[in-house]
Image (cartoon, rainbow, N blue to C red; front, side, top):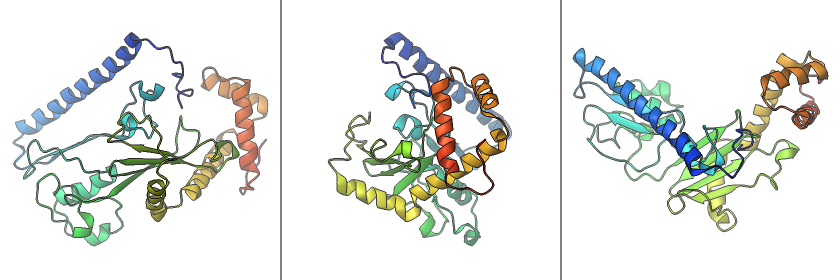
Amino acid sequence: MSISKHVEEMNYTSEEILKVRKTYYAMCAEADYLLNRVWEALTSKGYGLDNTFVVYVSDHGEMNMEHRQVWKNSMYEGSSRVPFAIAGPGVAKGRRVTQLSSLLDVLPTLLDMGQETDWERHAELAGKSVLLLAGAPSSAPPQLVVTPGADRAVVSQYHSNMGNTGSFMVRKGPWKYIRFGHTLSAFSPQRYVPLLFNVDEDPSETQNLAGQHSQILGQLDLELQDLFDPEDVDRRVKSEDFRLYHRFFGSLDQKQLRKKLERAYAGFDAEDFKKIQLWAKELASWGVPELLVV
């Protein structure tokens, strides 16, 4: 992933790293400024925290040169950990909740704030309301409410750009478990090994404890398997990737395809093109209906 982001070199100076982080913190300050403009517009129309809920979340974090990475795309804390701030009627001012939550909890929490009465139609929601954790009363059914002290696991998965293969994460207590999709031969379990971090004791996530705590790793993997089969998900994602590839590039011969990719991706070379060919050949061997590699 560091190579994909062109930040794999180890000789960045402190000044260069500081420049990246200054830019990121400036963007945070800009976000604060823009949010304040929204709030000022609301208060000018008579809204206030006595009659209005405000929820601030983010879809991802920023690696900010940690683990030789920038942007998002990663299961490390810098990318996967996001703010979830709530203010409004009944919410305890200044309370900081350390229990794990997920972006899947946003919708149930909004429904709870809106005093939803027909919860049956939301029975399949994966998340839960965190309104009670914020100190405000909750009207959601007990099975859809996160209660103080609940020892819950949260799960995430990623199947997009900069990631060679699918990645899956489970967080529970101090532990973070990461495993990868092994559908294609290039991403074998021997090369893409599982990761296990104690985030409380190792917040920088530099010590992989998977070999030392096999029981914990197994328990967290069961949490994941109870929700879905990660290898089945990885295979289905890659099948869909190949369908899209065939849809947009299947009519091109190899020379045309390489030229198109060279124009689209800076630094795309013969070695990259060889990887594309091997990837397409292996996926085509599955016999996905109506697909043919030119």
